[in-house]
Image (cartoon, rainbow, N blue to C red; front, side, top):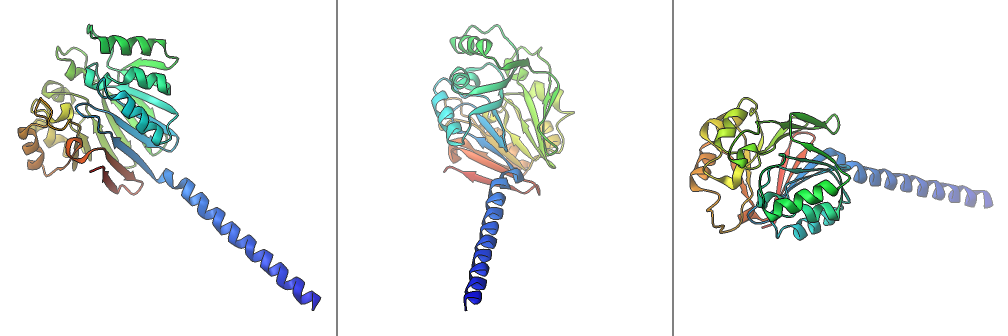
Length: 285
């Protein structure tokens, strides 16, 4: 009888061990699931840009909204668990792209800063950003043709369109992100003149971040023909004074059968790209 009891006890303990092993395996699957995708967060900052890219232990922020956006971006990033930004990219020096930059640089450890280079601007917003940038320990680089190879699945290509344009929008840092076989193009405020230079690179893009908030001065027919994107994301403020996105631009997107997402209507937009190249979208509104 005692032997039978011991046998039952051993089997019970073994069973518990097996159950615990299964639980641990499931926990590991949960933990590692993040490796299966990259998330792009188009943060609703009103009339401006702020794009957060989250992948495993790699975090990138592209632009920092206007002067009122810093606190919102910081809060959002902290909610995502961000402590360190591996890359902070400022596409150009307009206030609606660098407005919250100084606050973000003070709130997080930033490893690398890339921007469009110093300008003759004398705005308080630019001077404040420049002063904070120069006081940071981060590695600073002016944009040029370069690759940021995160791993075998994720790569960023910084594409130099030239810094000789009079309109600073056309000197925007342009980034092509490739995850698995999916390509995303981030265009800053690039307009038609820069699009002509860039057009040789713009090919087989899946997701386009609309340049200049959907202005009619960007997203030309020729450019959209070459890009041939399935999706476009517009970052613009609700009822903004510029009328962005312009009706002509929306018509061009529709003519190219692009699925349109807009922060002024949808709020913050999260695009998730999976390893099998499936793309899913989540909107705040």
